[in-house]
Image 1 (tube, helix red, strand yellow):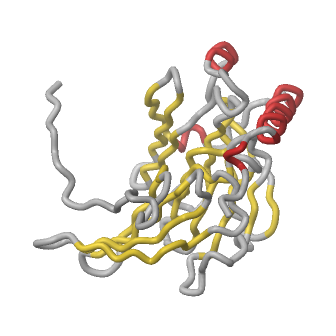
Image 2 (cartoon, helix red, strand yellow; image 1 turned 135 degrees about the horizontal axis):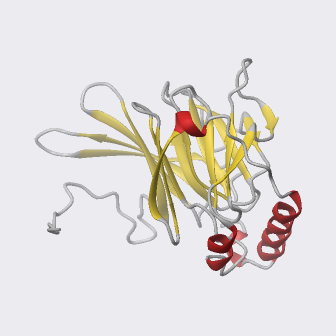
Length: 247
């Protein structure tokens, strides 16, 4: 294995704080626009907002910074994803145990409320849409991955998981559970061209699965265990300073 050091062709600055374009950047979602322009959505987790940027590629790299795109209702957001048809933006709300869906319209701004709230996750982390528009959510604080099928009438209101799949065995889960936000999956990505699911967690590094084999294979859920995970999250969040509003 040969490691090659490469300098970035452009930087969205996080310094100094009073001029920063991003603050505590975590996950990122990118999709193409016209020509060689791309939209970049950055999850600024501890500052609890999604920032909006455009990058233009060519002989030089140019950035346009559009400020805060999504903020209302966010409480320690961890993941951000855009649907394949670019109609929906999903944000995982770590503290409140939900994934918020926002209509990706020209009117979307920091004061826009979510169109839908996907609930029943302990601490959602990585999220992604499949090619059909269904949403998959990694749960950092439980052994499960939560699957939300897009309703025929479209996203809206509150929704519980269509089914759950146990992704981490009990021994591995509790070995990685050093606090009430940990033990389960962290990263999650779907290659929509071939329905390949990629996940990461503390002891598994990267795992690859076929969505076609997983789809519909719901596992029996230990409801008592899941409720204990929720109770632990709530106790931990109540005493955590990072969940307080940055305002």
